[in-house]
Image 1 (cartoon, rainbow, N blue to C red):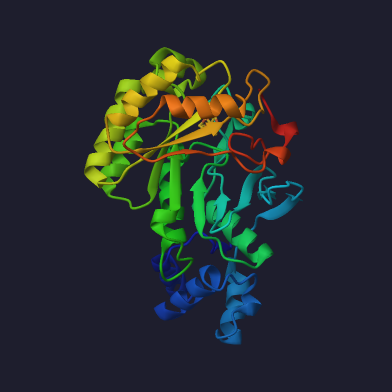
Image 2 (image 1 turned 30 degrees about the vertical axis):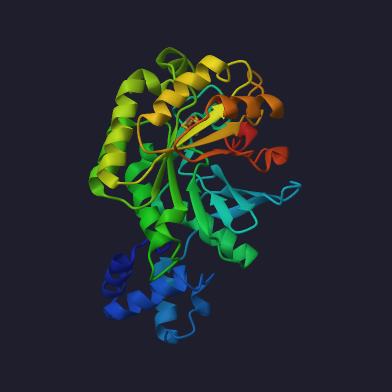
Length: 344
Ligand code: SF4
């Protein structure tokens, strides 16, 4: 069987070169072609001898996802990419241009098992984890298609990144390797819905990527209704893990709070949220809901501003993030793959 090269680390590329009877440094050259020069074919790897390029064609594939659809109708400039995987499944990634950066929101699983009530991805159920190569290939394919660099990566697409921990961490290492894609670790954000055990592991392993936690309610009972994962890892356990991370890593995690009209946007919610945020070094992002699931709606702008004022004074960074791309269902919580694959 041919070896898929996208998703291999530098050491694995060296090992692959040796496995096909080449010197280690050839592996490093191949690595650079894949991740730094973003070669789309072995033919483009012009400083490799022709015999080696032929050997690569015989023994390897660069990657094998295909772009099934590109939706660039959003007035915000965001573009949604639907990729078809080798097993016929689909995943989505979103390109988000801003004044001083370009961000890619990428998927870590096909679907998701966690069934958050407000999330479109949950409709798919979990089909499977993505490989590290399938995670990295989303970014490489989009960079190639657009012929431009990406400055930021956020693991906020389809899936719970920490439910596919090893592949996500491997992909993040490839994204941020200075010898390859060289995206800054501080510009790479891994978001979790609250797997407390994985947050602790992440802290213990000392990763430099930024951590975001999807909070969405300051009350255990309501949070468990909105996000069933909170029945396994309750709010106390989650906050304890996040505090552990903040102390151990000396980095401020970011709490993400999706504002759902009439559900979690009251004065009482704001005061309880403020208490949590003030209890540790952290940042807070308020995200007015992108209507996707019929049960919920977005509070109006005045109410969002009021909610933010209720939180003040806050000794930390507070921002309101109006998601871009909601006009083409490319915003936070709106990625749902192909409708024909929904199970919920
Ligand atoms: S919000 Fe995230 S964790 Fe929750 S169901 Fe959607 S993809 Fe999964």
